Amino acid sequence: MEIEDNEQVFYYRSDAETNKYQGFVPKVLKEVDEFTARNPAEFNKPESWFQLVIIKKDINEIIGDIGVRFIGEDDFQCELGCTLSKDHQGKGFATEAMKITIEYLFNSLNKHRIIGSVDPKNCSSIRLLERLNFRKEAHFKESLLIEGEWVDDIVYGLLKDEWNAKYKNK
Ligand SMILES: CC(C)(COP(=O)(O)OP(=O)(O)OC[C@H]1O[C@@H](n2cnc3c(N)ncnc32)[C@H](O)[C@@H]1OP(=O)(O)O)[C@@H](O)C(=O)NCCC(=O)NCCS
Image (cartoon, rainbow, N blue to C red; front, side):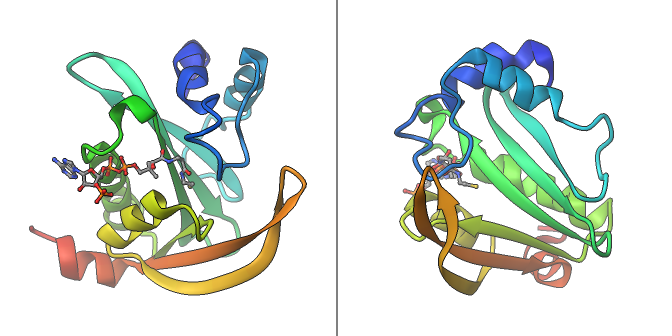
């Protein structure tokens, strides 16, 4: 995600209904400017979130993004988050973009484990993770404070071996 992407990112990220389970819902473009400016120059930097954009090639438009958090402790674990514009949901684009990202993290960067963290009410995100073979690992009660409200958090996990058993050479 780069500075010139900001207006397109603002369009789908500012949609309060689509993003009701997200921590980042910008009200003004300046918030996206700050968000993009925090994107590290380097991919795979420990203890950083790196935002990738999802571009629909035939229209050359940004339709969503994937955030990759490189967890710092051991260099082998990541967290993923995915956001898609409501205009392009329900067509498999998030699944396709996540598959490419996961494949790269496991089999090019040699990550061992990837997690996803979702609100239990966020059904489309849960379906996305389960479609990608993530396993439910934990349900934390009221463990996150979002917009002044304590919300539950479900953590999903996926190991490199589990991914390769399902998708390698398929
Ligand atoms: C999470 C999110 C990205 C999922 O988007 P999505 O559009 O449901 O996911 P996909 O693009 O992979 O589309 C899959 C859906 O399209 C359908 N589909 C239609 N054509 C398809 C095709 N050719 N290939 C695959 N799926 C297809 C699938 O059946 C599936 O529908 P279902 O979930 O009702 O079973 C989206 O809901 C979102 O942006 N939410 C807001 C942000 C958020 O809360 N993110 C989570 C926090 S990290």
